[in-house]
Image (cartoon, rainbow, N blue to C red; front, side, top):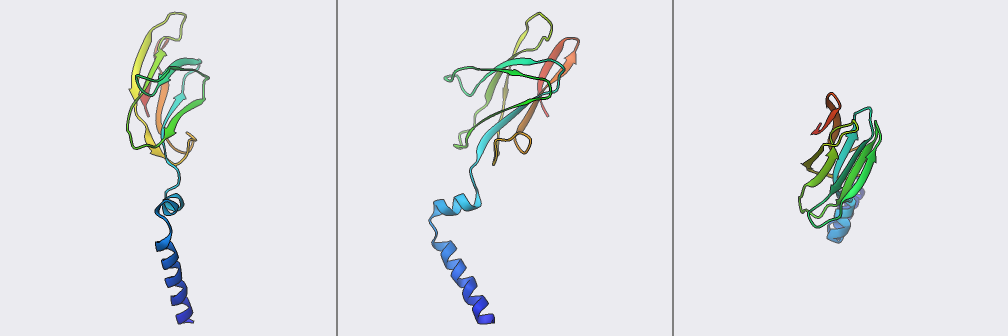
Length: 133
């Protein structure tokens, strides 16, 4: 019995060691993403735009109260911020603010399970702010 268990263990070790590195990485690491999650903790819809770098197009988002938006890309090991531009005044006036927010490495694109969390929150009066949780 001991010889069979030892033989099985050696066989498994040989198979694992001879597997291509990419197969081992896929089995042990899985896909990773750079993920930023933005939550709306206000009572109003928050309109904002974001882009990944100065060369990319602005993407517009209308984020309902209590909802979240996940911004992600395949993890290429190139760290960069996401620029967010938003109207910080929830009244009829407009007051645009711009912030850089930073992703984390994640194994999912689901913000309820992972991600670098930021949220729009009431500040004072009709004003909101974007801050890291």
